[in-house]
Image 1 (cartoon, rainbow, N blue to C red):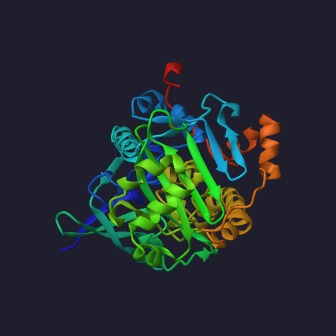
Image 2 (image 1 turned 135 degrees about the horizontal axis):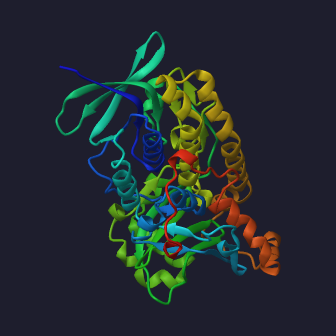
Image 3 (image 1 turned 180 degrees about the vertical axis):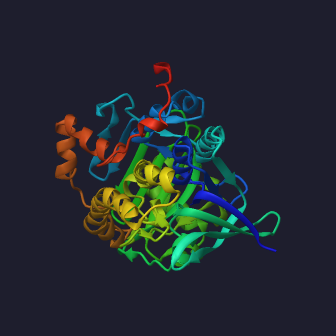
Length: 422
């Protein structure tokens, strides 16, 4: 028997965008239900960065002090190790505002914080183990979802004035709505794994770039979160060569890590990120909106996907709260305003990622990784960053703040936290 429920806004997906949207709408006094597919947030996330603009948002929401209690590291710069030498690519201490760093926080802790805060609002509901299996429609308009309780095995219908898909790059909501994103070709996939970090290792984020090889390493305190780029679609062939091939490649690229690559015991320790770069032409339908990766899957270049998704959520809440409070539903014109607001920063960032894919990553990954790298100095743009350090504030701002940061609406704000938490 189908169980019928009702809410004003159904948010599908309990990631950063979904939880921020749920919290903001609840603070507007709007009844909102977030459906999260899993039983908890304890999963192996790769996107554990909370950028400066999101830190500012948390402060505006009165959450900076609570956020400061979470285990975290601070990333204030990124260093690149190239064949021609080592260079600093950005300097987040040059950012404007109080938050001049990126926080590296386990995403499950961040999501638990948002869930706890949202639960303090009487109009907020979080349903876990709730897997969306379809959309409800009346006269062509989306009027909610059908979902399955993965714990009890029961089927439910949730009627909503607005349904928002925040369920990621493989969005079940997007598929159920029949919306197909425009895909931009990407030259790479990424292997993610962990290796021990030692006290005398470099701090912050380290990129290592060479002929046929790219790696990015994020300082997580006692370990490195490592990303090794491979040519698109080459995962199966490379895995067939055995885990020893990855150990050999990584040790050759980063000799100072050679004494610990044996910690990669098997391919079970290596996760594949199937890189996508996509964007929907229309992020909405009657009664339905998609934001974050569901609307625009980002390349991992720059690590800006979470930042962009949270900004989408803030803009959505600010633009739609008023009509939702008045009537409990929104018009297509209201949803179009959200897309118009968030389309250009998304398209701008994706254009930059596509340019880097073509000009740098695609060419380098197509090269023979066993070739001896040419003896060249640092590229001109990187030399300029070293000669004029003030320029390092430009890439810092693009990554940590983005082209259109969104701020909390006044009705969602709470008294500022203590500056000591900053």
